[in-house]
Image 1 (cartoon, rainbow, N blue to C red):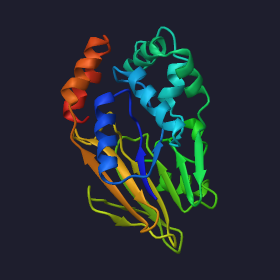
Image 2: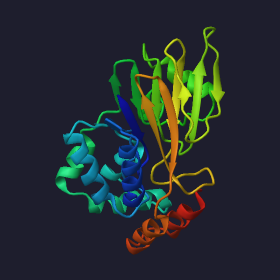
Image 3: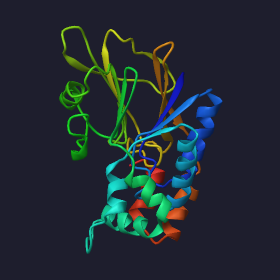
Image 4: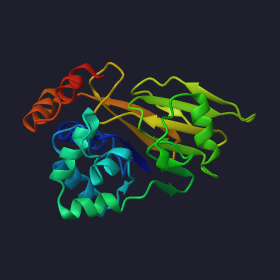
Length: 247
């Protein structure tokens, strides 16, 4: 199985379409969406329709913090992300709200665990940004040897050796990384819709369960069009401007 792992779509239709096209070109046979389908971006409805259709075809989908925020936005907040959540809430149809509300926080398949943030109390939305946080997540992942998540908007990889110490590994986009099952692995697959590492290409990852290789991928997309959609929606300007900067 070639599993396409996509997280933090953030209502960016253009980035999502580009990543899906790239995944199909890489012969992906299964798709997983790791939360934050909405928030920040200007096309939540279109993104949700795509994900919902793919879920009907067998894609795995879990819930992120921005999905929760769109279902219950905070009133009278001047924070930009809260403003985006409040606007997103007005764009959701009844079936879309029902879909988001029904999403689980985690999904297990064979030796894999999918989670938006950390397996250590996933409802707290902890950022897995370093080896200690990765170790905490792996400690709560049960017998899963491979944990895949998002939330941090960057592509990172950690592993545990035989002595149990968790260490980072610096992946190179486009280069398959062997991730054998005699070690435990945690990857944050980056953000489809809002990269934050100084590059504006969309991010996702491809996991080959037969060869046990993980490939982090970057995909150019029309970020200017995505920014125009944000501005047309009347959302905060920083949400649009940051797409070109990748920050």
